[in-house]
Length: 202
Image (cartoon, rainbow, N blue to C red; front, side, top):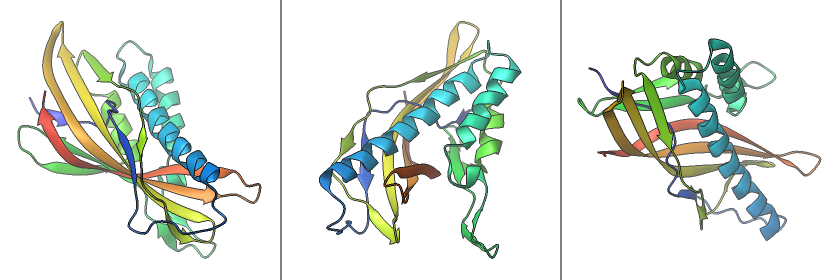
């Protein structure tokens, strides 16, 4: 059986990184904290949708609803982000998956990944999660009122055949987070690429 490691849900820790620490006197501590919380919220929301998509007892209509809701969490709704002239400024985000048996990694566009998750052959899939928290870090400014951060998280994926666990693993993931400050002062937070940093057999 080909066992694929899918992005899911044990968030043991969430860490915000940046290559350039934001140095902006207008970015107050409270604003930074707001951005951090929204980053975590988006990642947790995605994880929650995955649980509904993978649940074999849910009808296809429920799964399709959560697939579309998941797409709303990603930059460009999972497609290329283009400027007014049609130039791609942010490529369509991708999700990395890996096989514990071969160690090989593959990446898929968001919609591709979610459809594959919905159609997995396991009789039951369980995503286990724990409390998210954000360690000290920074936010990188990439344009006026636009920022990028990287959130690190952990997941446990469990696949069943009948009453028996046939696959279980834990992985460390990193997701790029795109943050934009709106004219209203609010922040829009959208997810980008998700990659695998390490994986272990549970």
